[in-house]
Amino acid sequence: MDPNTQRSMYAKYGGVHFVNLVPQRDINEFVRALPEQKRDSIFEVMTELDKEGLIKIQNDGQWTDPEGEIH
Image (cartoon, rainbow, N blue to C red; front, side):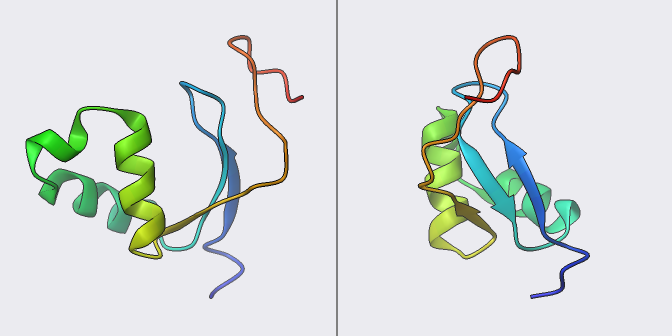
């Protein structure tokens, strides 16, 4: 994995900590290609991205609140 591609981020809704493993454009293309029922929730989208190896959901206990503060 290219370290320039990896970005530690937090989901806007739910505050889940994750790392992008591929360029953002690849993630966007994958999400656009998902069936509509798989795009119903951010949880489903992130689960699919994680399963495909496009992101890695971090199980590190870090999350953000609605104001974007890391806890």
